[in-house]
Image (cartoon, rainbow, N blue to C red; front, side, top):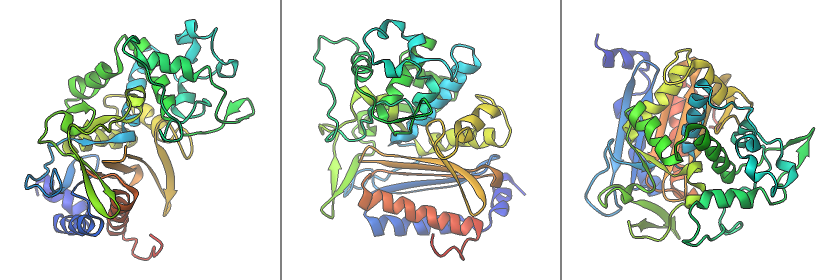
Length: 368
């Protein structure tokens, strides 16, 4: 029996034809131009399905080697970068922000004095959210500013905290800006800019293609982003003005291929199964499950008695999800080139439900 046959024997419930069928139904039901799904265990990636157009209404079809924007799933990459630097003794999770940036302390709000790298990843640093530009407009820096992110950080730490303290610790407030500060700490610890650190980690060290920004900023024939507006699919061409602000790029502006993203998440599954790889198994455990509910850039929980971790990423025109169930040796990723609540979010939720029901034989879980 070859490896592929062996993989299918381990998961006879999920099949290529079943995956193709539910992806097709999800695309039609929710008007998503393209969807890519990968199913894996720690030993191998055994099911991959990609369907649909790179651009709605155009003939070119999406492939497993096209780029899809992964949004806030980029936060897990930042966590791996941090863990690697920690294992190299260049920083720790307990390192305080102002131990790395002592020159910024004098003009900062004193409430942030003890904020650590871990606090920033846990979104327990009291930092403004910047998850909705309409509610929290970004500062506008002119060409005279050489380091926009550093100026943005100076601005952030001068503001009053955005979350309450309990027992001297800030309460959780999901914050994209928090990861900008965490990234700055990693930059100073490594001597590399975020962009170079991401490239070194994913491409040089792990052999996975990565791009910062929308896929169609690589080339016009890469997948375009889409949004469902008033029931119609709207396309976002390369020259469209909408993009993720550079100020929060470390929080969620990476694009990866379905093949590369699956390989990346398989490393996490292997680590959670006790195998050291790029970082230690213990580092993966800490990232995924070191803290209940929301750990170091990702969420976790228990469903049907099974512990899982995962996260969603979207900047509105693409959508990405990964789910890992380590004790069941099972994980999957879903990537789309549409990103709205009425389209991709519903499609990905629907696919997640049918993948989980089929794999775990959860037909009796009528609420899923």
